[in-house]
Image 1: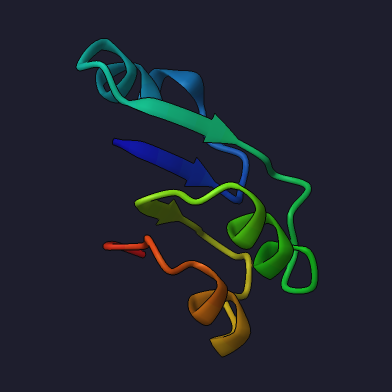
Image 2 (image 1 turned 180 degrees about the horizontal axis):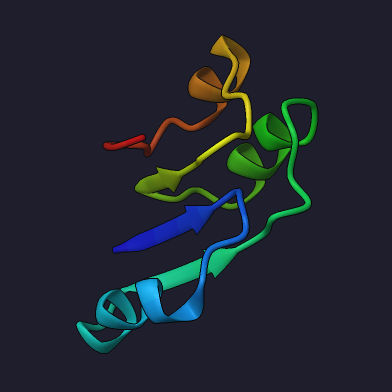
Length: 68
């Protein structure tokens, strides 16, 4: 499974996912404007956010998303 974290997260929180074989990308520079382009360019199944705004446009662009 491929996950994208659009906010800064401590690597210790992500280690269990990586240890289980999941690909976890951390891109805290993403914002509401760049997120749709990012999701369309390189599909992910899981999007993790804390404070990054996820717009309807981002959800439409993330066609492979199963969990936000």
